[in-house]
Structures are given as C-alpha cells and as structure tokens.
Image 1 (cartoon, rainbow, N blue to C red):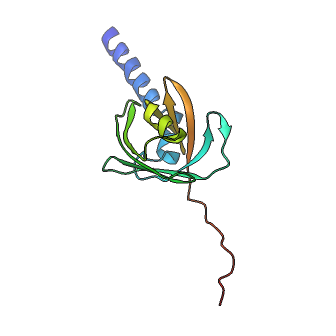
Image 2: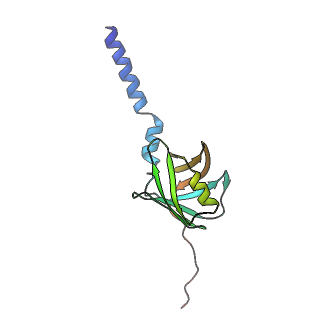
Image 3: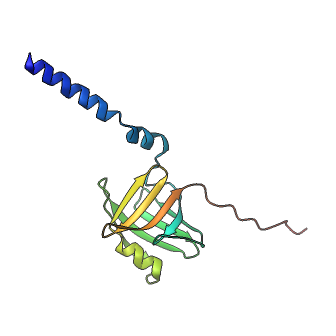
Length: 138
C-alpha cells in the first residue's frame, strides 16, 4: 500500500513539473538558436544606437551585419556553452567580445551572450528593420 501511495505521489509530481509554465512559454514564444535573425538590443547593459543583426546558421557559421560586418565559426551545446572562433576580420571591439563569449541563454524571444557568467549582449528575435531610402528618382 505504501509503495502504491509513493508511486502515485511521484507520478503526480512528475506530471506537475512536466507541465510547468516556463516550458509552455518557451514552446510558444521561444526561438531556435540557429536560423533566427537576432537583433542587438543591449551591449554591456547599455541600449545600442547602431543596428546589428546576428544569424547563426546550421553549418556553424555566424554572421553579424550592420554597423560592423563580421563572420565567424561557432560551436555550442544544449547546456548553454558556446565558443566563437575564426572571426573575420579580426580585431575590433565586437570581434574581441565575440571571441571571449563562453555561454548563451535563450528566454522566449531573447538571446543573451555571456562571458564568465556575465551577460554582455542581449538580442531579440525580430524581423530586421526596413531602411527607408525615400522616393526613387525618375
């Protein structure tokens, strides 16, 4: 009898934790790491003036477009570890920060890049901004 009661309690606990709100939130609003255009929102805790778009493709290629153009290779695992290598062109503040990146976390439509446990970049999954160039001359 005690065994059945214990198994029932464990089954209820497993059911409750498998249906938690955060997992439903991730399924509904979460974006895949690869293939999503990530727009830079904050850099070192400050809102950004420049426009950057980060895309990680399935072939382990990373591109940053916008104010500064970069390409790189990356490797990641599902436990939040990421490493960025072969950054071209080398040098520059953004390239150095990407090279020092050692972790990532997604939360709904947001991607956070970290180095030594501290967030340095916050990206949001949203469509790239359209650039208005005015009327076309005839």
